[in-house]
Amino acid sequence: MQIWVGLGNPGAEYAMNRHNVGFMALDTIADVHGFEPPKRRFQGWAMEGRLGSEKLLLLKPATFMNKSGQAVGEAMRFFKLEPDAVTVFHDELDLAPFKVKVKRGGGTAGHNGLRSTDQHIGPEFRRVRIGIGHPGNKDRVTGHVLGNYHKTELDELTDMLGAIAAEAAWLAQDDDARFMNDVALRLQE
Image 1 (cartoon, rainbow, N blue to C red):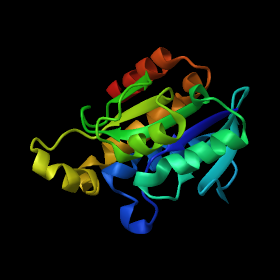
Image 2: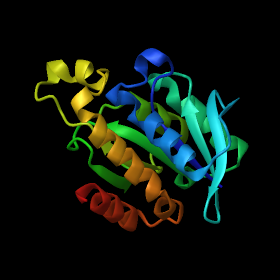
Image 3: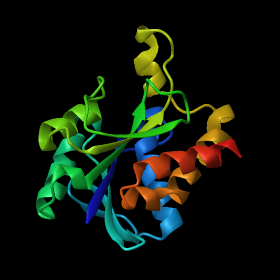
Image 4: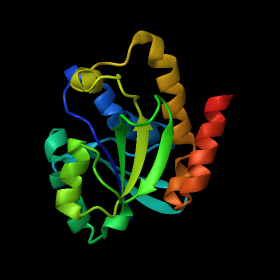
């Protein structure tokens, strides 16, 4: 069993925020791979399914970003898993828009959802970093992160989310390099 967590804020007013791209990634994976409909569990919305031979729980915490770790910790304890079975999909300021990188462990880079997760389960979880780019001035970061994707970005957003979902089986098999490579190749087409 693996737990894949999408970070975001609950509520329709946040649905298209850059900060919610983790939720968007999980929804796309669930749609493409035929996961069960979401159920309220673990202080969030949980969808179970399989990618190949791997059983997955996709979890969207409903606790708001700053308390995401509560839901992650609860699900991890329920399934008696270690942090290395957890993958967190999140927005990344320090990565160009629509670029996707994977890493294990590390700091939180000021991301409140990562900070909360780190506090609840420790730092040794896998992160799928989804680039949203930096607005250039630190005073504009909050507005950028909590701002909606612009209409002109929606095609690129859709392509990136589709690539993540199409190549997600590589993540399930712990082949992070192949996942990153194949997502990048799809986005070059």
